[in-house]
Image (tube, rainbow, N blue to C red; front, side, top):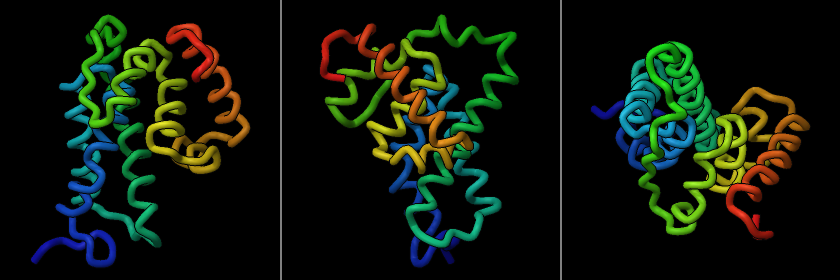
Amino acid sequence: MARLIFGDMDFEAVVRKYADSVLSACIMRLKNEADADDCFQNTFLKLYTNPPEFREEEHIKAWLLRVAINECKNFIRDNRKTVPLDSVPPVVQPNSDDFRDISWALMRLEPEYREVLYLYYVEQYKVKEIAGILDKNPNTVKTMLSRGRKKLKKIYGGDGV
């Protein structure tokens, strides 16, 4: 019998539905596909071994992204002496052409700005939702979005950001 996560969604259905979002968030944070794969697997392993009670389906994605970001932070903390992440060239394999066009610029931003911009523009979360995922004040998220846009504009150029 399949392990149900929420309603009639089993573990495999959740992985199929949210795999791209979780992997993209990990790649945005780590800038390395192999390390992102590890954090991706750890995220879904946590869901499989100890799934929380979800009130609504939309909470599944938010929970997964929060766990993935925390896994990436832990990975960076545990490997900061041995892996110079900023020297690793970005490897991104997103599905959207629009995302590919700007991904190289996002990869040049500091991780905290990259995360906020990714969650806002790619995953289309609202400021309040991002604050919950990152455990930050909504005003802090607004400030980070504003500063991140300015930095992205300098890198990417133009007024389209």
